[in-house]
Each structure stands twice: as C-alpha cells, then as structure tokens.
Amino acid sequence: MADSLTKLYAGKAAAGYLSASLLSGETLGKSNLTLLPNVAYKVNLRNFSMANAAVADATCAFTSAGDVTYVEKALAPKRLQVNRALCKNDWLSTWAGENMRAGLDGTLQTDFANYLISYTGALVGQQVEKSIWAGAAGTGGEFDGFEALMTADAAVVDVSAGTLSAANIVAELGKVRDAIPNAVYGHDDLAIFVGTAAWKYYVQAQSTLGYLNEFNAAVTAANFQGIAIKLAPGMSADTMVAGRKSNMFFATDLESDMTEVKLLDQTMVDGSDNVNLVIKFNAGVGYSTGADMVLYS
Image (cartoon, rainbow, N blue to C red; front, side, top):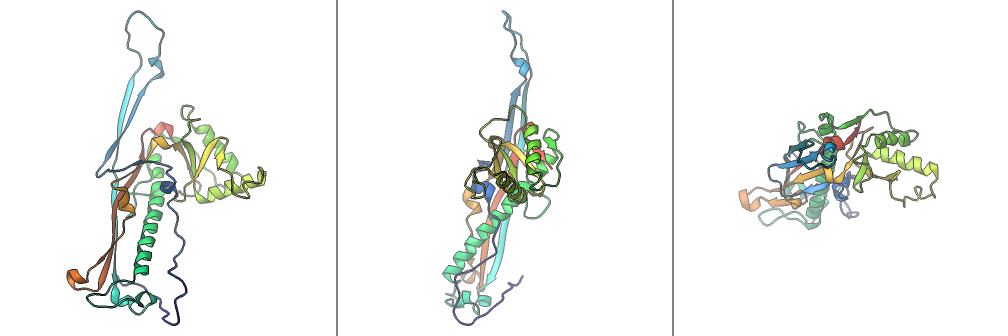
C-alpha cells in the first residue's frame, strides 16, 4: 500500500509534526483494572465461595454445612500487531526528508522517526482502550471487551439502558447504584465506568447542581454518592459498567510490548529503500465473578 503524502515543500517547516488528537488510553493509563502481566497464552481466573449456610449454630458433632463453589475462567489474550512499510524515497521530497539521504546510508530523519514511534504508540493505546470496553474478537485488531463478555454472561446483573442526557444522568446512575450487589457495595475499589458522552452529562449535571462551583472548575473528584466514577473513552454510548478493580483484569505478555515500537531499516537487509514499522503484543480482558458485575446497556 502506498503512503498518502500531501506535500508543500516551500519555505521553512512550521513546528514539528502534528496529528489528530488520539483517544487516550484512560483505563490502563490510570490503572483502573488489575494488570496481569507475563501471560503468553492464557491465565485462569479463579473464583472460590462458600454459601452463607456455612455459618451455623455450634454443636458437639462435626456436621458439614454449606456448599463450596470453585469456578475457573480462562482469559486468553489475543495476538495483535501493527506492520507498516515506509519508502524512504517517497519521503525525500517532503520536509521529513530535508535532512535525509537516499541510498545505503540513508535513513528517516531523527525527529520524524521519533514522531512515528510516539504516534504509533498512541494509536495502539487508542485501539486497546476501545477493545477493553466495546471490542469484538471477530473484528480484526480487536479482542472481546467487557461489554461483549458481560452481555453473554447470565450471571451478570443487567440494567436496561435509556438514552443518556444531562437531564437524566443522575437518575440513570441511581439505577446502576441500586443494582450493585450488597456484598460489592462499599468496597474501596468499586467504580462505575462511563463513556465520554456520559461523563460530560455527569459533569454538566453536577455543575448545574452547583456543588461549591467545583465541577465548573473541574477540581473535584468524580463520584456518585460515594462510588467512584471512572471515564472509559472506549465504551459504547448509553452504556455503563460497575465493578471492583480486584475483579476486573487486563492480561498481556510483556508490558513493554505495547509501548515498544520498532523502526527497522531494510536497506542493509534486502537492498530496498523501506523502513518497516513494527509493534507486536497480546491483550485481553476478563473478570472472575459475573454476579459482582453490573452492565447498564
């Protein structure tokens, strides 16, 4: 595939290289999930519980009471990659090629190479953020996200969604709060995850309520009646998820794989004028106990 280059080689370059704003890797960047590193193939999420009937009145005899439940769920990260070839000859007539020479000792300009590495890393972060929440393994470049996993799980607590707005966001968050199981409610790592539009509605609603004017100044922590609200930019519209960080997992092999972008000059390998851009990693999400999760959709 040929690169699409819009060139204006006249005068001096304005300043660096600019790209469209990329969706931030909010969920991983703020450690909102439990990270499981060094997962090359798959990992088992283990759930162990005993019925409340295990606690009984004391007697002189030994009587086994209550059932023990043990369930294992496999979390298998999906292998993903970015492969792109850039022809150095194509870039010679652009500002990126001002300090670049073709031939055996030619290479991409240093600041442009650094920009490519940074941009590709951010692009991967954007795609992973989307997959964490709304991904579908059947789609290229994605893995099954929480929405898909929870929709297919009968144990998950479901809440019927409406069309979110600033006028109803507080009431709809109340539905999610009410659906959170009592055994989960009150834990420090419990959070309600919302998409970008819902986040905006929430901040607007709180600003309208006028709490010390702090929401208008964006200086107060986001929470709903004591439950943390977390921004999940990759989440689908009119969707919310409630769960504990200790029950929500992101698995990958080496953490550095998702941030290590390689630029491999092929001139000394096969005599071509190509520079191969490569990043390979695996990623996937899952949870242990479906009954402790709430899906508003």
